[in-house]
Amino acid sequence: QSALTQPPSASGSPGQSVTISCTGTSSDVGANNYVSWYQQHPGKAPKVMIYEVTKRPSGVPDRFSGSKSGNTASLTVSGLQAEDEADYYCSSYAANKNYVFGTGTTVTVL
Amino acid sequence: QLQLQESGPGLVKPSETLSVTCTVSGASITSSTYLWGWIRQPPGKGLEWIGNIYYSGTAYYNPSLKSRVTMSIDTSKNQFSLKLTSVTAADTALYFCARLNWSHDSWGQGTLVTVSS
Image (cartoon, rainbow over the protein chains, first blue to last red):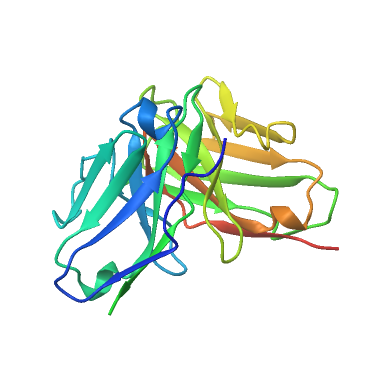
């Protein structure tokens, strides 16, 4: 299984929105609704921000939202804040209890 | 409050076996709701899923690592473990353990394992 494809970087000014794409195949992203998104600050463990494509865990700001169309999932961060600057990874269930992560996107708040 | 804590050797020689353990506190590892997983991250690189294990001991591995990986679970100690054989420098990484319920919803802080002679 190959890693899901994400853009290496994305950026926006405070208050703006940024959208990160995550492209897989009909065997992973396109096959189910178990796509999740993780935020990782330097030196820290990843933290789940979105699960099952659109759901937010308790405590995650509603500025974070997820969607999916076909083999591509997306994470949108609205109203960018300085603390949103981090690496973001998508992940998808890929059948037979396998999982695959995305290549990662570094979000910079200008 | 759920906590996961990895422990490992820090340094492993090439061709030897890497062993890391995750100790779970604040929840029982025998819950039928969750699987328990390992993810690694080479320095400066992205995340790679290694595998997941159920409390029964049934495990699922990344096909690219399957020939070298074995996961196990010790319900009496509320721990699960990872063994990776025939390691090379490419296996140098931060190894994370996590709880899985369709997403990896809780993570340990990670343990750095360096493969070097």
